[in-house]
Image (cartoon, rainbow, N blue to C red; front, side, top):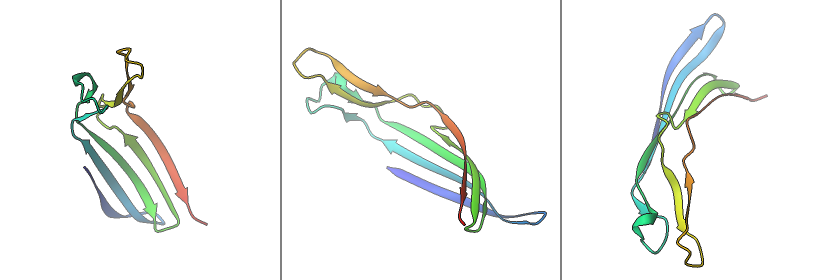
Length: 108
């Protein structure tokens, strides 16, 4: 499941006329098995992630915003699989940590 929304507020600062925006996105994943064997060792527990951004937008000319992925620094497993050859090895990929950044978009 995923959902998102954006709140916009007209903003006027000196000669700047545009809008301030706050955006949030939510993605949720139910429990699932990472391998067709349905082994309890390959069960990936469900998780929910929240991503957000806050910025200024000047029409279609430019946008500057700060963003964060995995806002609450949720730990989760992205995938689990049983290694070939019946060795008993189960391989997985851990979650990405919280990531923060700033972006600027401009159109000329």
